[in-house]
Amino acid sequence: MRVRDFVPGDLEKICAFKEKSSEFSFPGKGVDIGIFKRQILRSLGKKRPDSIKVVETDDGSVVAYVRFGIKKTITGEHGSIKHVFVSRDYRGQGLATMLMKEAEAGLRALGLKDIKVVVTKTNEPSMMMCKSLGYREKRAILEKEI
Image (spheres, rainbow, N blue to C red):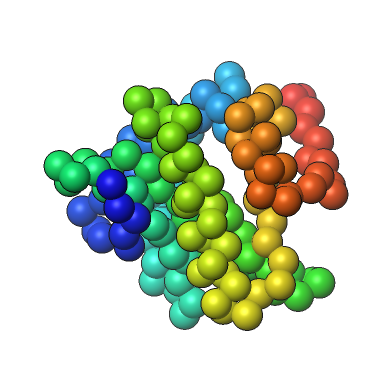
């Protein structure tokens, strides 16, 4: 297996991953893949585009990916890890950790000092992985159905 940069042919596989991950990221809700696809394409066309790294097996299958970039807010710029996904059959092999470290290295190379990642509280494996990499809870996003 190897980590490589995203190529346009990976888009459909990443969209399929997003659909599968909605059970963790958005419990009880679906995702609009059309919007997700447009977000990826738009982010790649920005002046400072997001980066996407994929894990490819020896037979050429894409089994995991991470999307990350720079986010500008009123407090300055910080790194943002926007999505990490590993196919079910490849979980528990350290691929998500490897991709997080790739993202961190990419963001560090851009001169960023802080990285933020949003993880759904019920996604315990992701919460534990992030904490093992030194991420700490600083804020909470509260939701309410109306």
